[in-house]
Structure formats: C-alpha cells, structure tokens
Image 1 (tube, rainbow, N blue to C red):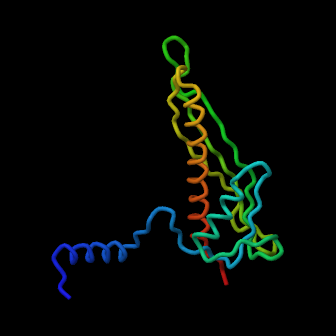
Image 2 (cartoon, one colour; image 1 turned 135 degrees about the horizontal axis):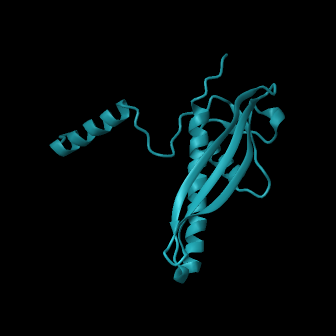
Image 3 (tube, rainbow, N blue to C red; image 1 turned 90 degrees about the horizontal axis):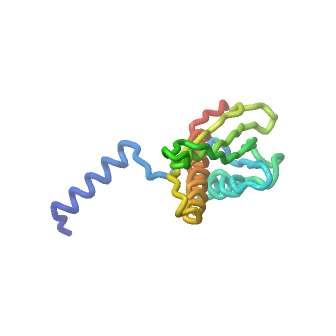
Length: 166
C-alpha cells in the first residue's frame, strides 16, 4: 500500500494534535463520579440539558434520586437578565446586554460540600432595531439557548477537573 505525501502529512498533523491533548469543543474528560444526581429549579430546562450532556459525553450515569448517586449537582438558580447597553441620540435603545447567570454547587453522598456555591455569568450583546422587533425576539431566544449551552459546558469542564480523595 503506497501512501502519498498528502496522506502522510495529514496523518502527522492528526498525531500531533492528539499528542498535545487537543479535544473538540463539547468533549470532556470523564467526571470523577460513577453516578451523579442533578437537581435544578422548576421551570428551567437546564436540568434536562445537564442530564443529557452528562449521559452523552461521559461515563458517569445520571441517577434517578440523590440516595443512589455518589454526588449531587444542585443548580441553585438559573436567571436570564437583559440590560440596556447603549442608547441612540434620540433616546432609543441600540444594544441590549443579555446576561445568563447560573449558580451551582456539588455535594457528595455524605452531604459534604465538594464545590461551594459557584456562579457562572455569560453575556452576549444584542443589537436592537425598532423595525425588527419580531426578529430580535427570536434572536434573543437563540442567544439565551446558546448561553445556557455554554454554561453547561463550563459546569462540566469544572466538574471534570475535580480531584476526589480516595
């Protein structure tokens, strides 16, 4: 089997990327627990999205209740905020600052707090035009979903870095 120069070059690049620890976005190393219970406030989709992310991207099993799990991830709050960022000369809003705040903590099976209340705040700028109100509302919802997905990734990255003493 003959390998041409281009194939060899591609193989070298792939091996170098793998050797330096490169991972695609969304890939996390395994969490330090065999099972995890996720508790989230009612009316928010972050709990379901966290469960989906944990079950698809790690070997950790999502437990049905806290007594079956090695640890409990408790989402204390998840809040969407919107603040005026800038105004035009005529006093009309030009930009909004969208903020998504998540506060979470991690508790082990004995009730000992492994990670105290930790806040993740993600912001996005939403340019605003009065002529495009419906489109901007749809864009705002998409940005909020994107910010929640980013917050979930940050939570999982932080949890994967935890070292549990044996």
